[in-house]
Length: 226
Image 1 (spheres, rainbow, N blue to C red):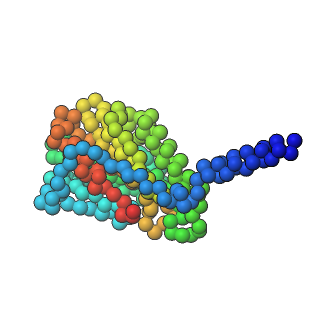
Image 2 (tube, one colour):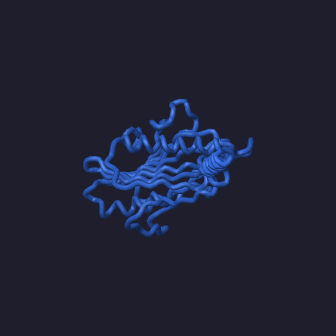
Image 3 (cartoon, rainbow, N blue to C red):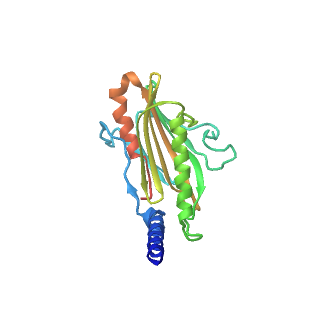
């Protein structure tokens, strides 16, 4: 009887060790480093035709074609992905003169997160962001993303570096092609992470001309940190 009890005890201990090994640890989560970017033909972002812009409020930067018209709303327009009472909204659109292509950059969801060291970072904090990102991906795949809408997805990837995330999606709807990128990173001067969005569209008949531009611009859209 005693040998059987000993074997059962050893098996139980091994199961506990395996279970603990599978549980996420803070170090393991922070060490994650999976790259995600758009692949395909790109263009050279020379300063004669492209300029750089940086949004200090949301801590990201991007490039834009100088021959695209920059459009800011006359009054503050709240993106569908945010509540109308949210004070952080900031949306800018760049449009080709004949409306053959355009893209907009806008702020999204914010998540409480101790980036300003108001308290110790915990595993639960990162798992909360993991879930928010997973929920957003589910919305994209279900066609319920309020800005992108229902598209036929042709490529998708998700990247993560610690608690910062990148989502890259290419898709189509009717005669329009879409390049959609979401970055999740720190909101400067706050204990929050923010979803920042880049949404590019172009006419499918002009894919050879505008897809390389879109891929290049999307890959230039990056958070300042990490």
